[in-house]
Image (cartoon, rainbow, N blue to C red):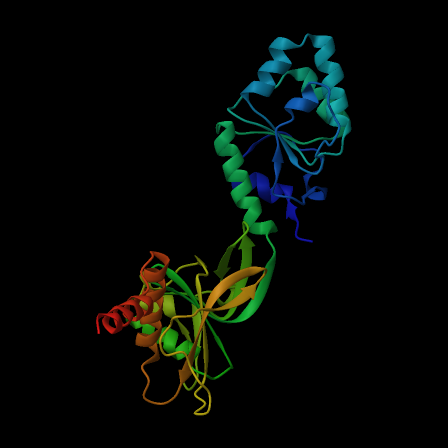
Length: 307
């Protein structure tokens, strides 16, 4: 199970530490957050204790202005008895001393942010989603081609890196070569990146390792990209029937997400860089609602009906 150290979370969101407890021992297990409105009103059934608790303007106003001191102490005592990861206070609000005393009693970390509650939620969930999302590492090359994330797969030595290098020369951007770390963000989106140790490097057989960023400039690389299209490169088999019209789509599933897959046969004389670039452009057209193969089929069908 993926985990996030709370001290890393604090650094990433630039939170002010009001009470740190024992941060090195605390880990965040879910990207979901909770605003404990019902809990502060005394309803603790189905309390999501594994989530970070966020006290916004409404919660703090309820605690400090609606409840008297005795009521506030009772409800905070009950609230902080639960084994929660930490409490975030938004909008830079002041936290009463009596609340901090109870936090120290139960060793519950308290942090503060100047962000409004909605933006704090967004920042926290975006960061945690990326780190806690299901992940897998796969062999292949990931490129950003005209805004389309194209994931090249195929047997070792088929020419993925050489094709990617040609596309870099044509103005497209390299994300990862050889190993692609893929994580699932949301229900149907995959994001790929390169492992830190080999980021921006590429292996070209006969030449060796090259640094794409140093050789072609910072505009030739990008750290992360959504994966939109999978292209499988394979040696051309004369007996095999390959797609010629593009009326039907094939798919591949990665981490439960279904992606369009195109099989491109490789043989001497084919300009794979141009073919893959066209495939990416055609994918974008289909995404926008225009299908060239379907348009041609309709025209031919209408022409036959006229006779």
